[in-house]
Length: 322
Image 1 (cartoon, rainbow, N blue to C red):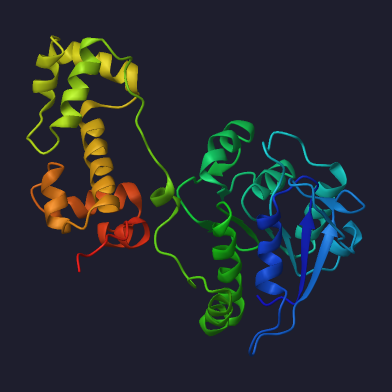
Image 2: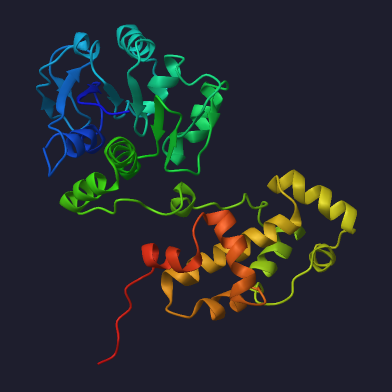
Protein backbone atom coordinates (compact mmCIF):
# COMPACT_ATOMS: atom_id res chain seq x y z
CA UNK A 1 0.00 0.00 0.00
CA UNK A 2 1.71 3.22 -1.16
CA UNK A 3 1.27 6.65 0.35
CA UNK A 4 2.13 10.22 -0.56
CA UNK A 5 0.55 12.50 2.07
CA UNK A 6 2.02 12.08 5.57
CA UNK A 7 0.34 13.82 8.52
CA UNK A 8 2.55 14.13 11.61
CA UNK A 9 0.38 14.86 14.66
CA UNK A 10 2.33 16.89 17.24
CA UNK A 11 1.25 17.52 20.83
CA UNK A 12 2.55 20.05 23.35
CA UNK A 13 5.42 19.13 25.69
CA UNK A 14 6.74 16.38 23.43
CA UNK A 15 10.45 15.52 23.09
CA UNK A 16 12.02 17.16 20.06
CA UNK A 17 13.86 14.08 18.79
CA UNK A 18 10.80 11.85 18.55
CA UNK A 19 8.82 14.68 16.92
CA UNK A 20 11.46 15.01 14.22
CA UNK A 21 11.83 11.32 13.30
CA UNK A 22 9.03 10.98 10.70
CA UNK A 23 9.85 14.41 9.28
CA UNK A 24 13.49 13.36 8.86
CA UNK A 25 12.52 10.11 7.11
CA UNK A 26 9.76 11.42 4.84
CA UNK A 27 10.54 15.13 4.62
CA UNK A 28 13.25 15.11 1.98
CA UNK A 29 12.97 13.68 -1.53
CA UNK A 30 15.64 11.05 -2.14
CA UNK A 31 16.54 9.13 -5.29
CA UNK A 32 13.59 7.49 -6.97
CA UNK A 33 11.20 8.00 -4.05
CA UNK A 34 8.11 10.15 -4.53
CA UNK A 35 8.11 13.60 -3.00
CA UNK A 36 6.07 13.00 0.14
CA UNK A 37 3.84 15.82 1.26
CA UNK A 38 4.60 16.04 4.98
CA UNK A 39 2.13 17.99 7.08
CA UNK A 40 3.27 19.03 10.56
CA UNK A 41 0.05 19.29 12.56
CA UNK A 42 -0.39 21.21 15.82
CA UNK A 43 -2.87 18.88 17.50
CA UNK A 44 -3.71 21.37 20.25
CA UNK A 45 -3.63 24.59 18.20
CA UNK A 46 -0.98 27.28 17.97
CA UNK A 47 2.76 26.67 18.12
CA UNK A 48 3.78 23.26 19.47
CA UNK A 49 5.72 23.66 22.72
CA UNK A 50 8.38 20.97 23.16
CA UNK A 51 9.57 19.59 26.49
CA UNK A 52 12.73 21.75 26.36
CA UNK A 53 10.89 25.04 25.83
CA UNK A 54 11.32 25.36 22.07
CA UNK A 55 8.23 26.25 20.05
CA UNK A 56 7.54 24.71 16.64
CA UNK A 57 5.40 26.60 14.15
CA UNK A 58 3.41 23.65 12.79
CA UNK A 59 1.43 25.10 9.87
CA UNK A 60 -1.49 22.64 9.89
CA UNK A 61 -4.44 21.90 12.16
CA UNK A 62 -6.29 18.63 12.70
CA UNK A 63 -8.38 19.14 9.58
CA UNK A 64 -5.24 18.26 7.58
CA UNK A 65 -5.54 14.69 8.84
CA UNK A 66 -8.77 14.17 6.91
CA UNK A 67 -7.24 13.28 3.53
CA UNK A 68 -3.77 12.05 4.59
CA UNK A 69 -2.67 8.60 3.42
CA UNK A 70 -0.41 8.03 6.41
CA UNK A 71 -1.03 9.51 9.88
CA UNK A 72 1.80 9.35 12.41
CA UNK A 73 1.70 10.17 16.12
CA UNK A 74 5.43 10.42 16.92
CA UNK A 75 5.07 10.58 20.69
CA UNK A 76 3.05 11.84 23.66
CA UNK A 77 3.78 13.65 26.89
CA UNK A 78 5.96 12.19 29.65
CA UNK A 79 4.81 10.59 31.81
CA UNK A 80 2.12 9.35 29.43
CA UNK A 81 -0.68 9.15 31.98
CA UNK A 82 -2.74 12.13 30.75
CA UNK A 83 -5.66 11.51 28.40
CA UNK A 84 -5.10 13.03 24.93
CA UNK A 85 -7.55 15.68 23.71
CA UNK A 86 -10.81 14.33 22.35
CA UNK A 87 -10.52 16.18 19.03
CA UNK A 88 -7.21 14.49 18.24
CA UNK A 89 -8.57 11.05 19.14
CA UNK A 90 -11.62 11.58 16.93
CA UNK A 91 -9.39 12.66 14.02
CA UNK A 92 -7.32 9.48 14.32
CA UNK A 93 -10.37 7.22 14.48
CA UNK A 94 -11.91 8.98 11.48
CA UNK A 95 -8.67 8.63 9.48
CA UNK A 96 -8.50 4.92 10.18
CA UNK A 97 -12.15 4.37 9.28
CA UNK A 98 -11.72 5.95 5.86
CA UNK A 99 -8.70 3.74 5.10
CA UNK A 100 -5.62 5.68 6.17
CA UNK A 101 -2.67 3.90 7.78
CA UNK A 102 -2.28 5.10 11.38
CA UNK A 103 1.07 4.81 13.11
CA UNK A 104 2.43 5.54 16.57
CA UNK A 105 6.07 5.93 17.50
CA UNK A 106 7.35 5.59 21.05
CA UNK A 107 4.78 7.00 23.52
CA UNK A 108 2.39 7.81 20.69
CA UNK A 109 1.07 4.29 21.30
CA UNK A 110 -0.71 5.67 24.36
CA UNK A 111 -2.63 8.02 22.05
CA UNK A 112 -3.72 5.24 19.69
CA UNK A 113 -4.71 3.12 22.70
CA UNK A 114 -6.77 5.98 24.15
CA UNK A 115 -8.53 6.27 20.78
CA UNK A 116 -9.49 2.58 20.99
CA UNK A 117 -7.56 1.76 17.82
CA UNK A 118 -5.45 -0.90 19.54
CA UNK A 119 -8.21 -2.85 21.25
CA UNK A 120 -7.54 -6.56 20.81
CA UNK A 121 -4.32 -5.93 18.86
CA UNK A 122 -0.65 -6.48 19.67
CA UNK A 123 1.26 -3.23 20.10
CA UNK A 124 4.53 -1.92 21.50
CA UNK A 125 5.99 1.23 23.00
CA UNK A 126 9.17 2.23 24.82
CA UNK A 127 10.06 -0.68 27.10
CA UNK A 128 10.21 1.55 30.17
CA UNK A 129 6.53 2.47 29.76
CA UNK A 130 5.23 -0.89 28.51
CA UNK A 131 4.01 -1.96 31.99
CA UNK A 132 2.06 1.31 32.31
CA UNK A 133 0.52 0.78 28.87
CA UNK A 134 -0.55 -2.73 29.86
CA UNK A 135 -2.09 -1.53 33.15
CA UNK A 136 -3.85 1.47 31.62
CA UNK A 137 -5.16 -0.35 28.55
CA UNK A 138 -5.62 -4.05 29.46
CA UNK A 139 -7.45 -4.63 26.18
CA UNK A 140 -4.15 -4.09 24.30
CA UNK A 141 -1.76 -7.02 23.82
CA UNK A 142 1.45 -5.23 24.84
CA UNK A 143 4.66 -6.61 23.29
CA UNK A 144 7.52 -4.94 25.19
CA UNK A 145 10.41 -6.79 23.52
CA UNK A 146 9.95 -5.87 19.85
CA UNK A 147 11.08 -2.83 17.86
CA UNK A 148 7.76 -2.45 16.06
CA UNK A 149 4.47 -4.21 15.38
CA UNK A 150 2.85 -4.18 11.93
CA UNK A 151 -0.88 -4.92 11.96
CA UNK A 152 -1.55 -3.73 8.43
CA UNK A 153 -3.13 -0.29 8.75
CA UNK A 154 -2.15 0.04 12.42
CA UNK A 155 1.54 0.07 13.33
CA UNK A 156 3.32 0.85 16.59
CA UNK A 157 6.99 1.19 17.48
CA UNK A 158 9.35 1.17 20.41
CA UNK A 159 11.07 4.27 21.74
CA UNK A 160 13.16 6.89 19.94
CA UNK A 161 15.31 5.01 17.41
CA UNK A 162 12.60 2.37 17.15
CA UNK A 163 10.57 5.05 15.39
CA UNK A 164 13.23 5.24 12.69
CA UNK A 165 13.03 1.45 12.32
CA UNK A 166 9.28 1.60 11.80
CA UNK A 167 9.37 4.53 9.36
CA UNK A 168 11.98 2.72 7.27
CA UNK A 169 9.82 -0.40 7.45
CA UNK A 170 6.90 1.59 6.04
CA UNK A 171 9.06 2.76 3.14
CA UNK A 172 10.34 -0.78 2.57
CA UNK A 173 6.81 -2.19 2.66
CA UNK A 174 5.46 0.35 0.17
CA UNK A 175 8.44 1.07 -2.12
CA UNK A 176 10.95 -1.76 -1.62
CA UNK A 177 14.25 -2.37 0.11
CA UNK A 178 16.30 -0.10 -2.17
CA UNK A 179 14.17 2.91 -1.27
CA UNK A 180 14.47 2.20 2.45
CA UNK A 181 18.21 1.59 2.13
CA UNK A 182 18.70 4.89 0.30
CA UNK A 183 16.98 6.80 3.09
CA UNK A 184 18.88 4.90 5.79
CA UNK A 185 22.17 5.62 4.05
CA UNK A 186 21.36 9.32 3.89
CA UNK A 187 20.53 9.36 7.60
CA UNK A 188 23.58 7.21 8.43
CA UNK A 189 21.47 4.61 10.25
CA UNK A 190 21.09 0.86 9.69
CA UNK A 191 18.24 0.03 7.28
CA UNK A 192 17.22 -2.84 9.55
CA UNK A 193 18.25 -3.79 13.08
CA UNK A 194 18.31 -7.38 14.25
CA UNK A 195 16.46 -8.43 17.38
CA UNK A 196 14.11 -6.32 19.44
CA UNK A 197 13.99 -4.12 22.49
CA UNK A 198 15.08 -6.99 24.71
CA UNK A 199 18.73 -6.35 23.84
CA UNK A 200 18.42 -2.80 25.26
CA UNK A 201 16.64 -3.67 28.49
CA UNK A 202 18.39 -4.41 31.75
CA UNK A 203 16.33 -7.31 33.18
CA UNK A 204 17.32 -7.72 36.82
CA UNK A 205 15.11 -10.24 38.58
CA UNK A 206 13.97 -8.82 41.94
CA UNK A 207 16.38 -9.84 44.68
CA UNK A 208 15.48 -10.85 48.22
CA UNK A 209 16.05 -8.48 51.12
CA UNK A 210 19.71 -8.59 52.08
CA UNK A 211 20.76 -10.25 55.31
CA UNK A 212 18.47 -13.29 55.24
CA UNK A 213 19.65 -16.83 54.40
CA UNK A 214 17.96 -16.80 50.98
CA UNK A 215 19.74 -13.60 49.96
CA UNK A 216 23.08 -14.93 51.13
CA UNK A 217 22.57 -18.13 49.14
CA UNK A 218 21.79 -16.17 45.99
CA UNK A 219 24.76 -13.85 46.49
CA UNK A 220 26.91 -16.98 46.65
CA UNK A 221 25.32 -18.34 43.47
CA UNK A 222 26.07 -15.13 41.51
CA UNK A 223 29.70 -15.31 42.61
CA UNK A 224 29.97 -18.96 41.52
CA UNK A 225 28.12 -19.01 38.20
CA UNK A 226 31.15 -20.63 36.58
CA UNK A 227 30.56 -23.69 38.76
CA UNK A 228 27.78 -26.27 38.63
CA UNK A 229 25.26 -24.58 40.93
CA UNK A 230 22.21 -26.73 41.70
CA UNK A 231 18.94 -25.75 43.31
CA UNK A 232 19.47 -28.39 46.00
CA UNK A 233 22.82 -26.77 46.86
CA UNK A 234 21.17 -23.37 47.15
CA UNK A 235 18.43 -24.76 49.41
CA UNK A 236 21.11 -26.31 51.61
CA UNK A 237 23.01 -23.03 51.82
CA UNK A 238 19.79 -21.26 52.81
CA UNK A 239 19.24 -23.94 55.48
CA UNK A 240 15.83 -24.84 54.04
CA UNK A 241 14.23 -27.96 52.68
CA UNK A 242 13.94 -27.99 48.90
CA UNK A 243 10.17 -27.58 49.09
CA UNK A 244 10.37 -24.64 51.50
CA UNK A 245 13.15 -23.07 49.43
CA UNK A 246 11.13 -23.30 46.20
CA UNK A 247 8.06 -21.77 47.81
CA UNK A 248 10.02 -18.97 49.52
CA UNK A 249 11.99 -18.26 46.36
CA UNK A 250 8.90 -17.79 44.21
CA UNK A 251 7.27 -15.58 46.86
CA UNK A 252 10.27 -13.27 46.92
CA UNK A 253 11.41 -13.19 43.28
CA UNK A 254 8.32 -14.16 41.31
CA UNK A 255 10.18 -16.87 39.41
CA UNK A 256 11.63 -20.34 39.93
CA UNK A 257 15.18 -21.05 41.14
CA UNK A 258 16.02 -22.71 37.82
CA UNK A 259 14.82 -19.75 35.77
CA UNK A 260 16.61 -17.32 38.11
CA UNK A 261 19.89 -19.19 37.69
CA UNK A 262 19.55 -19.21 33.91
CA UNK A 263 18.72 -15.51 33.95
CA UNK A 264 21.78 -14.70 36.05
CA UNK A 265 24.00 -16.67 33.68
CA UNK A 266 22.68 -14.69 30.71
CA UNK A 267 23.15 -11.39 32.57
CA UNK A 268 26.70 -12.45 33.36
CA UNK A 269 27.32 -13.25 29.70
CA UNK A 270 25.99 -9.85 28.67
CA UNK A 271 28.35 -8.06 31.02
CA UNK A 272 31.36 -10.05 29.78
CA UNK A 273 30.42 -9.41 26.15
CA UNK A 274 30.15 -5.70 26.94
CA UNK A 275 33.39 -5.34 28.86
CA UNK A 276 35.86 -7.94 27.54
CA UNK A 277 37.14 -9.24 24.22
CA UNK A 278 37.11 -12.86 25.37
CA UNK A 279 35.82 -15.38 22.80
CA UNK A 280 32.18 -16.37 23.15
CA UNK A 281 33.33 -19.90 24.01
CA UNK A 282 35.25 -18.55 27.00
CA UNK A 283 32.37 -16.27 28.01
CA UNK A 284 29.99 -19.23 27.98
CA UNK A 285 32.19 -21.28 30.28
CA UNK A 286 32.75 -18.38 32.69
CA UNK A 287 29.00 -18.15 33.34
CA UNK A 288 28.37 -21.86 33.66
CA UNK A 289 27.48 -23.09 30.19
CA UNK A 290 29.27 -26.13 28.80
CA UNK A 291 30.02 -24.36 25.52
CA UNK A 292 29.09 -21.46 23.26
CA UNK A 293 26.69 -23.84 21.50
CA UNK A 294 24.83 -24.32 24.80
CA UNK A 295 24.79 -20.57 25.52
CA UNK A 296 23.50 -19.30 22.16
CA UNK A 297 19.85 -20.51 22.15
CA UNK A 298 19.26 -19.32 25.73
CA UNK A 299 20.94 -15.98 25.01
CA UNK A 300 18.94 -15.43 21.83
CA UNK A 301 15.68 -16.39 23.57
CA UNK A 302 16.24 -13.91 26.42
CA UNK A 303 18.06 -11.07 24.66
CA UNK A 304 16.67 -11.39 21.15
CA UNK A 305 20.00 -11.55 19.28
CA UNK A 306 23.05 -13.80 19.22
CA UNK A 307 26.01 -13.17 21.57
CA UNK A 308 28.13 -12.01 18.61
CA UNK A 309 25.49 -9.51 17.46
CA UNK A 310 25.05 -8.26 21.02
CA UNK A 311 28.80 -7.64 21.32
CA UNK A 312 28.80 -5.71 18.03
CA UNK A 313 26.20 -3.34 19.46
CA UNK A 314 27.31 -3.04 23.08
CA UNK A 315 30.90 -4.25 23.35
CA UNK A 316 33.52 -1.78 24.58
CA UNK A 317 36.19 -0.63 22.15
CA UNK A 318 39.23 -2.06 23.89
CA UNK A 319 42.64 -0.52 23.37
CA UNK A 320 45.23 -2.70 21.65
CA UNK A 321 48.81 -2.43 22.95
CA UNK A 322 51.17 -0.90 20.40
